[in-house]
Length: 265
Ligand SMILES: [Zn+2]
Image (cartoon, rainbow, N blue to C red; front, top):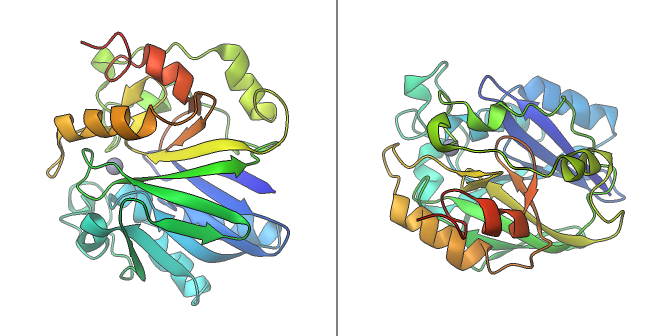
């Protein structure tokens, strides 16, 4: 399968492009640089048929409109309580950063437990409010991220930019990623190829950090509860692909995450 990560926009959001054998692609969080995303799809002979936003912040939805223009039949899905942010520069925070961002409205509103089907894969929707009211994660039991190239070098600082919309401030973040796993992931993941559980965690959970909750609509208690009750119950080996920064695993975050893990107060 194709499983690519593009780091897009000024806030360095991770945009994920998935495809199976055919030309149909699923795009998660085209948060900027839409023409580069489209160029990437073109180069691989892909067409976006499905777009999912993990939440409604500008740095995750800024490319929606341009992608829809290019792929008029592409559906847009987002968590129900973030749907209004697609249309509102105030709610999606673009009013406060650079250019005003407006997306076409959602075709599908996602609730906890919903299933997003794409090709032969099924993604379970986990509602994880806290960073935003309608934030979601997508979980698949059997994706195969082997060979996924990260299209820009992994930048260990990008996950903890204090000025971004996503990650909780730098002060408390600590990075304890196993460097072998990080480079293994760049090459094709720990344990070689083959289907394995994968979570797209948006701005809910990051490698050694969690999403900011100081933006309007945020809730620290909801965020931590969601991470513990919905993400930390997934299989330990689940690979976690966040909205910013490098990938991690459920096992690593359960143990080491300074905000939600075993050692958090
Ligand atoms: Zn965000």
